[in-house]
Image (tube, rainbow, N blue to C red; front, top):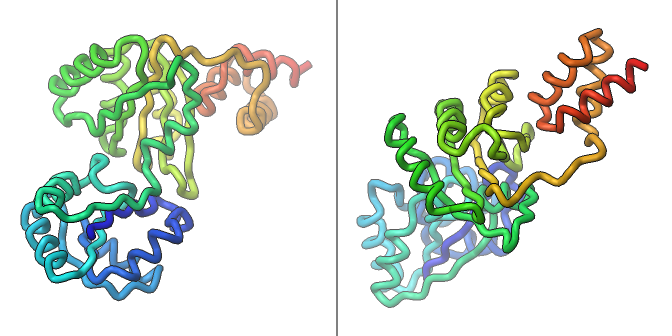
Length: 283
C-alpha cells in the first residue's frame, strides 16, 4: 500500500512512533527532497531506498510507485515537512495511485496550518476556516486573489495562509489593504522550532510589528486572518512575555506612551493594558 506520512515541521520529536515504524518497514520512500529526507531516515534508522517525488516529477514518481506496489512493496510518501499534499507535492501521486486501485493510508502528524489554528483561539460559531496556501508573488495578482478569498470567507470563516520570509512584508501589507486595518491576524512563525513565536494583532499594526525586530521576518510563516465575527476577548491581564517586556522598557526609562507602543508591537498585547501596567510600575 501507499502510506502518506506526515513528517516534523521543525521538532523531530513530533514524528509519531507509527510514522517512524512505517518509514523503517517500507521498501521505498518517495520524497520531495531526498537529501532532507535522508536525514530523517537516518534519525529513525531506516534503510529504505528513495525516489524523487517533487512537484516537477509527480507523474514519473506515480509510475514508479505503482511499479513498486505491483511488485508487492509498500511505499511511504513524504514531503520536506508536514503533511504531503497540504501545500506540498503529493496530491497528483495519491490520485494516480488511487486510480490504479491500490490502497492509500494516511499516517497523520504535523501540519503547520493545524498547528497555527490550534493556538489561534478561534471562537466564532463552528470555528470554520479555509486553507488558502501560498499567495501569488506578483502584487496585483496577490491583491486579486486576496479579494477573492475575502469574498469566499465572508464574515464567518477564518483564512489560513502560508508565506515565506522574503515575501512576508508584502503579504502583510496586501492583507491590510484588502481586509482593512481593524481585521485581526495571528502571525505564527517557526512553529515547533526553538524561536517559535506567535502574535495576534490588528492588520494595521502587522507591518510595524514585523519591522520592530529583524528576527520577526525570519522563518516560515502561517497567517490566520480572523473573521469579523471573531473578536478578541477582552483581556484583563498581561501574559508573562508582555509583562517582562513592559518591565524592561520601564526600567530603560522610556515614556509611558512609548512603552505601550513598543510593547504592543513586540507582543501583540492590548495597548491599554500595557499602558496601564507601565503606569503602575512607575507609581
